Length: 231
Length: 231
DNA sequence: GCATGATATAACTATTTGGTTACAAGTTGG
DNA sequence: CCAACTTGTAACCAAATAGTTATATCATGC
Image (cartoon, rainbow over all chains, first blue to last red):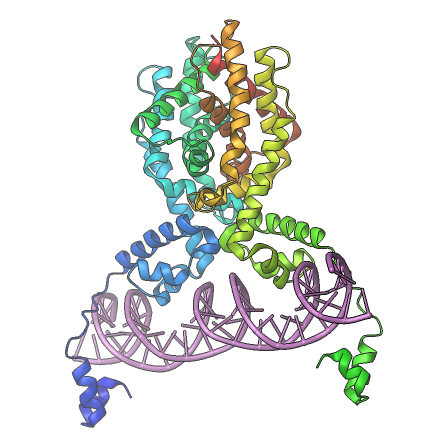
């Protein structure tokens, strides 16, 4: 017997209390997409801030202004949620890269654009760096189980290969440059500077995050990248 | 009343059981230094493998073949133990650097030596990379509270500055090169390649850790470093 | 207009966790 | 040789944790 049925057939003291409680009916308006998105966003913050082991499922539910039941409903368990966060975060950078038009202008300009885009994306999305650090701590255990992430990266390599090929054709770049090495160089210089800025600024007693320093390091990345591929 | 006292004054069934149990007296030989060192080593592995939040105090005690009581006795609490691990790990690389003789031969040779040393230390000590990643996740919260780590780094910067100054004097290196930027470049290229190798080899479907690949990347670091400072 | 499935809440549970306590036994200085 | 201190073991505890259950209510296809 449900509360509603009871209300219709009986008129006990308990039913009256129930009624009083329900006077302000808590406005439980539904919004599956929003709930799903809120959980994902909250989980991204929590996992980025505390790592997988340090993240608290209760904290995620609270931050998403929902409860654990919904979280388990949409994502299965803590690991499933973590993987969803990882996939969404990778998708964000790879999708943003697609708006880059590397075939524009000359190859040097294209390389500069890719390097600066990567640097700026890292700057704008510190959670991406934190999640990668966490995932590598776990030897990419979860990422390896993703069927989506594997396919996400061909576009980047294709575009980068294209730029290198055109640069080689004009005699601007060396022949036989490995695109993955080039990307690793760009990513390494940006990733390390930002992801390790807290320990670095502590041990070297120097602030690394002033706007001038950040701009200068961006240009350093461009210069290093071009230096490594120029003929 | 202690068990020994009871044994001397009484002859109950319980006392006999106690005696039987004590026949093989468990050889509880003491060794404070060893216990301390074992805990530190076990904690290094555990924190490196699981991060601060994911590390389990029980697991550390078990791995050290001791128990939690000793761990709390020597290190206060989980945070104190973590900080001790961090300090010991930093001390290891900075002490090893002191055996480098960068003033030897010419400046280019010195820079090459520093870059390769750093790369090889990262290779030989993956736990250093993991701990740094973890500590940066926490915004260097614990490292900032260390009074020891702050003083550890002057030697490195002094040595590096010396090499740069001598290179500048011979006209080999550009003038006004910032030693910290040079070190960041060396560390970034090595750190990222190794610490992120699991996600990188997953998304690019390429093995990065063959001996040939590692040697090649070491030479890449040297080449990039020199390219960034040569006149 | 109502049966059905999806979405939501909150209380609950078994287990794990960091940390503590009681006590035993080795070590050492006087 | 023994009192005081250090090093060790194991059982214990309160709080926190991931995951579940009971139940209710919204939304929608028929």
